[in-house]
Image (tube, rainbow, N blue to C red):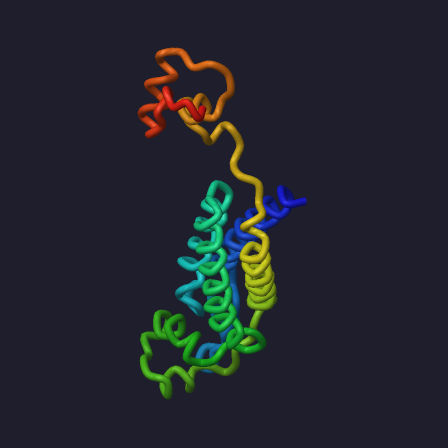
Length: 197
């Protein structure tokens, strides 16, 4: 069960981070222009500039979580909660109809007009696509997964033998020690001649 908990935590971080990166390249809003009768598409990265960097950070946390020790797991879980909160707070205002201030950079790039009043005169309306809602749901899942990791990470099984060095495996092995093993024991700070062994 705990092995599945690790896998579930890692996969959730990777999946939500990946969806966040994908969503940053997708159209989050369409702007109807009053001056030209055209529509302008605005991507998630333009509406929410921190979307791609934070999503990439979540993806990296998922990769690190797959090999992290107990202390680092808790640190990554706390960072995951923080990232989820920041992403939720950044995404919520963009659900429904993005504010004029969010689409202003895209309008300015196309029209050359600056300032909220000038941009407001050429914008007839802003319509959101489903992407902000999809992304918001991902951040809620990320928050829940981060809390789950925080609660269960201490009881996750340790990494397998493949993560141990040869010397460490020999150190924990059983049976009599030869001269090479004795040197390995000394390098670990253990006296191989100790009678307690």
